[in-house]
Image (cartoon, rainbow, N blue to C red; front, side, top):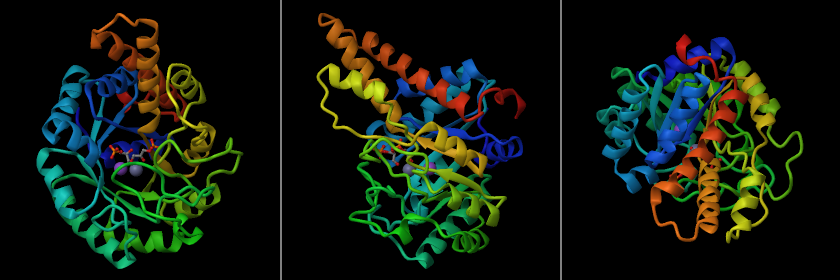
Length: 331
Ligand code: G3H
Ligand code: 13P
Ligand code: NA
Ligand code: ZN
């Protein structure tokens, strides 16, 4: 069944687990997420970005998620809109039937320029007023996402600040977070704690304290009833990078967020963990390998099935690591 994000994350908070929120653009990603959820008895958050809506079209994204709900009726599913850049964008998603929207007011409507605090409060509060009237949950964002190592926002097309960011921007302030939540009424808050979007988060193998775990703790202590969201949570699996590069790919050395660090975050209030890049890497690796090993194949179903299998394995790993597994039938 389709459920709101508030309902799912309240359960996750009560029982101390986190939920991966996977981005969806196509049927293979959708099936991988659901097959993994089915295998592990996990509730699901799937999210469509502006890029996904441009690629597949909003009706296709919506119906793909509804098809998943129909095929796996025993799995609770949140249909979430990722990184809305205006209340109007969020309104259209609410109209389409999304059960949750993100109003990312940390950046202006261009998705690139860091905004003022007052702007962020204003657009987020307007979105909450509208969404809550429709039973739809809202995620806001405070702070500017960027790598604590490189000071850069990351390479995702569409969303991300341009240029070097200051430490002040890269870490969400706990007092400001408390003020933001009281002024806007958001259900969930994306915080800046050292992660960034895309595959190029860290240039060296990350050491234990690559994320600002203490900052997560301090924010959670100030707003214990607001679910924290960690964007840019791909781990950039080194084995898939190797598969890609062994079969004609050219991806430079790069590192993501270790799963153990995400688990630390979950211990301190992180409930929604956004993952896109890892599924992109796994599917690209699986397709490159299949085509290299089967040069005569021209049936897309054969290599796309390999992609689905590779993505399913990642989803199973994350559901198990974050404690999501075992909870679908308890909500
Ligand atoms: O927030 C970034 C997500 O990874 C979505 O990326 O805009 O390329 O679909 P996208
Ligand atoms: P990754 O690029 O680390 O997968 O992050 C995805 C994300 O935050 C989507 O909102
Ligand atoms: Na989001
Ligand atoms: Zn994001």
